[in-house]
Amino acid sequence: MTISQLRQGTGVDALSASFDAQLERKSERETKTGKPFYEIFLVDGTGEMKLKVWENRPQFRALDDIPDGTLLRLSGEWTQSQYGIDSAKWDMRLLNETEGSNFLVGDPETRARQDADWADILEMTGAIADPRLRVSCAEFIKQYGDRFRRTAAARKNHHARRGGLVEHVAQMMRSAQAICSVYPKLNHDLLTAGVLYHDCGKMWENSYPEAGFTQPFNIHGEMLGHIPLGIETANKIWRDVKEGEEFPQWQELTPDSEEIQLHLLHLIASHHGTHEWGSPTLPRTPEAIALHYIDNLDAKYEMMQMGYASSPEIGPGIQERQFPLPASLVAPLEHFKTKENDASCSKGEAEEDELF
Image (cartoon, rainbow, N blue to C red; front, side, top):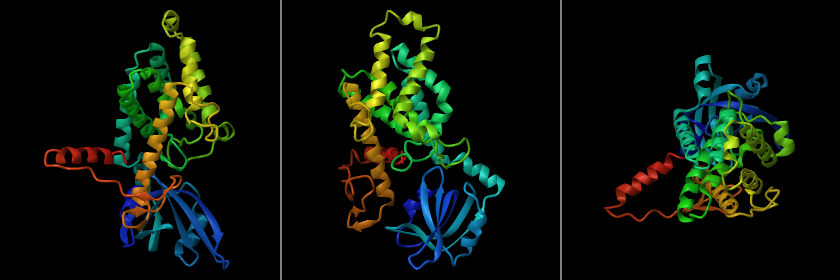
């Protein structure tokens, strides 16, 4: 199983299962009575989990000799409570070379979903009509595509997994297309490019190594943050595009190229929406407002899906709050079904389930 599948499958009753994971880090701690225990953090391509290892378990001493980054297989009887996943009886072993290689490729379901999302990003950016924005997006993908594809959208709150940024950006682009059909005065080309670039600075905040599922910390990400890094990256790409053979041919196009660049940078700078959330400036254009709310909607929606999949039930139809959402989760209302739309609703729900 993956960590995500384990989280969705466990409850009060024990689930017998094995899963592979990378040891992200371990922390030796003490109980109130002074007894030592390890808290280990495990990750794979679908998520992360914590597990306490008590001193009376054989795994406690084994962890002394296991460095961070080690690939493990854990097997046991797993349960889940408000404190997370736990087991009264479990064991672990190192993955052999073949198992480790298969694990680092990622689980097939996540790979297939992210491959489809990447194909959508290529198609939607390739369909941009304005040649300056289209070439800028293509140059960005050429220079940073590999790093982009192994970056998370966050460290923990949403799409916090290898390739999560691709999932987030693809869904935002699809949302932008839908919104532009309702508000046709929105600049669809600019909004599409803005979605691609808005979190590109996270390639230095939340990127993964070429092999592995542990997010390292980057000094540039820590000292500058993803919005300034995104602005610098967009400026670099724009300078590269201006040096290309095609750029002089675009001098007579409207709007002016410098104006396009400024609007694109504004989308990156303002997409968090408020100064309190880290934006150096506030949204001042319709596209900036749209980008902010599309970003916020997709992040919040995935947090809710994560909560429905893993948060303990605290009452009938009520689940524990998923931080940073503002309140406890309530089970969503089912779709109205008739004989005519029952089949189509089931198909739509199945397609949505594939996103998570």
